[in-house]
Image (cartoon, rainbow, N blue to C red):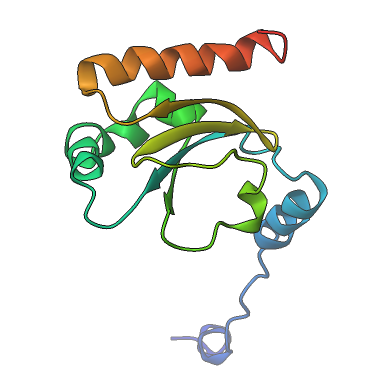
Length: 136
């Protein structure tokens, strides 16, 4: 090896500083909700058999569907204090209850789990309300 190559190899490498993390933080601080317009809240409680059935039939594929892309799932334990950002959601009594939540307001809900053949059309109707706006 020649002298220049040996010197270069022995120098410690500097790690480039990433610009994406500060950019992502900046966007999250300046544009709240801009990256995620809607979410599907699943209010559930421990031991809920219908919640377990939903997770087995729908939950395993939900995030891979167009509906899951439009309104990502957020599970909320009904036995714990409600998160501060969900105070605008009307009271929930039964589990599971699915609430479509967008821009800080409740768009609509599905109370209970009626089975996969009914769930998807009911969810599609809720998601259609997003496209119609507040009057729809």
